[in-house]
Image (cartoon, rainbow, N blue to C red; front, side, top):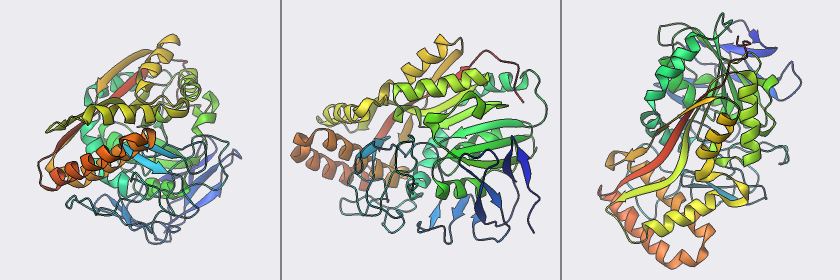
Length: 415
């Protein structure tokens, strides 16, 4: 039996509950994008924290994870984009679910298949996850959740817990706050940020999940957490829309804005739009896992630095901020009177994360080659050696990220 629908800011919301539910898109009351409501027909299920898809439009089987991360969208058709070392290709039409990939754990190998959408070479059916810009084709891309599932445990371990206490203090002292915290998760992917953060905050919460991909929004909605740290309820609604068009009005009543691995795939103009929206709404922003442009591999190789440099150049192509994103965000928030804290949030990967290391390596080297094709002969040797070391359990990788907490001056309008 379906739980009665509730509304928040004119949008349909889905009360969190146990048990399977199927979600179907409905047009939002605001006339822009779509929200999702519960229909109670039980096609999607959540078991042990893993969302199991049984027919969501051509996607592949199970997928846990999701953040705003693996979604860099190139402006030109067919342009590959790299995120956290993983090259996403905007390929031909269709879902990404037909491509094979490394599953749970497993060994690394140069001949193994690549997680759909996460490898350095585009294949038919692969697309980037979410459109960041309104001038792209109307048909939303789909992104297989396997990569998001692979990275979710590493993301959860890496996020800077030291930023949570100052965030909790601000949330506990929101002026005029009554009722549930309204949390907007930008570029939510399959919802890993909510699964990480909601159980770490006290009090009832209402999460508004923003993404361009309705396929991922389904996963995010059915995989959302059900309770806060103190046992209070958590509800969720979904909104399709362009992050580049975010306005303070879209965040009306927001208590908090979150995003994961998003800043570095924005241009400076898009970052300013995001910062203006957050500061205009007077709500704090917790923006995690932005690439810092530094990678450490053990054992070292003479080509490490050259691959890193080429990858960083790829991250900055076409005006994207890449490794400069956190510095630019700090400057933009500070210029608008916000207090800003930054804390490191590195991935620290070893033999237990072999599958993740493999996919990251393929994408990291692939993006470097896309930027500097002259590296090909040496980079192919390098990748073979690195994959062999990964398979033997001898490779360790640190991928540096930064988390940012911005505390704007309150407008007094928080919900």
